[in-house]
Image (tube, rainbow, N blue to C red):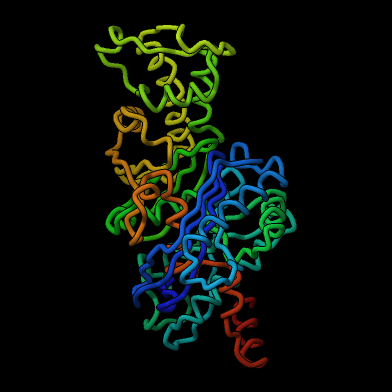
Length: 422
């Protein structure tokens, strides 16, 4: 779809519900290109969310309220006492599924308009309506006019019939209802949904990466999500229910220490790749349940790295297997961008390069201005991407497509129906 930007001065709020943290950004559009400046941020350790799934609605609601309240306070000068009403929210990749569809519409020789594209997308949407899932994204990925392939932009062209290849993403209805209940109880409405890895990619990929083929891997606390981009669009999304918290739990078990101490050791001394110096460097591991911190357990750093590396390898091997099974082949491209809070473990990039056999770089939000340093890193890529998504890609939202498609007069609709079905 052609990307239409939100009007200058629009206020938009993004709510990122993750397993490790819940984050909220309030942004304002500052120019006609849809660029945001961030006015308010809030983030809080997650409550009631595990591996991308809400497990306790009361705790999740309490954390959402705290997070949103912190962002509102920071943006108070602009909001002038008005509370937030609407938020764009992420959907964890473990509750989403990618589908490929093709829809064809009759053009009958006239110039192809925006509405013709919407008609094709609306037609595809009607074919996948179900009580079991909700449609999250309807993303056109390529067009054919009268059988001619490889068309990126059909508007303004002429032909008899046009077909559109579409990447549709659906979300599990149960997971969405639980999330919607927690948000509803916080007196907020969901204005749009976006799959986490898609948002992370929109925030952290440069245009050439989106165009030429690139996989973004978002390593969160409880879930590792990934999305494949090509031709400027997301063509596939998926996720595995393993993330940074699983690495922390492995450390806690392997070194018999508390999860909070395991998390601290991971951040201070952790690495995904072994080095020769690890054997000689001793680290202090507080013993579990003992209050006397003066008698820690001294272990070589190599022991810690030996716990982290197999779990990180497993994450990348599972991602590689899912990408292979996707059948995308050459469309995957040669580049990978790692983002998410757990992507910051030293050596992770090198290990990803080794396992995935691709060029790898670390990504962080690049499209927002005014982001405070504390929330400008990889951990906030999804939150930042939600703002960019709702500003620039609203044409991929199923409800927007249905609301804006003009079917013409009754007679025109009947003619179209006869054309398309006989």
